[in-house]
Image (cartoon, rainbow, N blue to C red; front, side, top):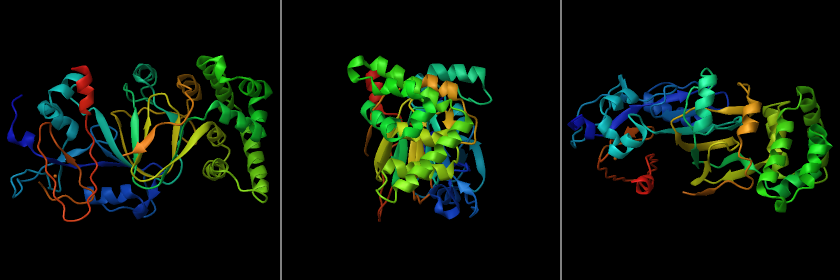
Length: 381
């Protein structure tokens, strides 16, 4: 398809919001404030605003809003009427993706951009790799609606807390020694396997033992989970009178208030607890367990909404799939630091391939950009 002038201009987008119950409520939510500015909609003070989606995913599509040419010659959409979906517009103008993106991913945006406002913990979850995503989608399309994987990166814009990846073997041994209720829950035989294994036994052996004890934990009966959590809570409340509780113990008490009698609260002892400062980032590959706990972030991922959950959620749980799919790698996940048109807070713009952009600002300005990394093409072409 031949390029037309409109295909080389910035497009203003009207984006979608997700009102999951873990979102911050009303004006306290950055998502709510951005969505109000982006859409012109009123926000409800008692309603949770969890995620702002910018992309082509059908569960939360963005729309191109039509507008006249700006005075500086750059056409940007500013009209109040929502136009065609971004996905449909891209399908009719595939050249806006650039030849290399089109060659690798076809006629669709290969990533999904989000803003998250987290008031309480998200579910203990993992995202399937491509092969498993296809199998899950084929077997349960009502639950797993995409056949694509979902690696993701979160960039903190406030102080941000998360659980991610399994703690080291030595740390896990410490947990079993210091949290006797977990030994009661999983049984002495499983606990002893961990206590008597060493790194010298080999990575695969360690992973196998970790998989066994974690699966036993996540498969425990509701009655046992309720009993063990009650015992943990009582013990920590007593011990807090004579010593300072650890960050992980304080987190477990917080999670128990949010999700009483939930196995995900106990599983927190198995995961790394990380705290990001604004500007620091966290990458989560396929099949890695995680749960965001609190704070606000920018998130970018492959275009997918596949989530396998097993705790800290009222939604569908698939414990068997989650426990079988995880990599069981141990140790901390990677964390690090990290248009010619008038734009304000809440504006979202789509820039077609090969569009030149210059930015001028009279005051402090924060812009977040998602795109396909050039290094991918340097490696493949």
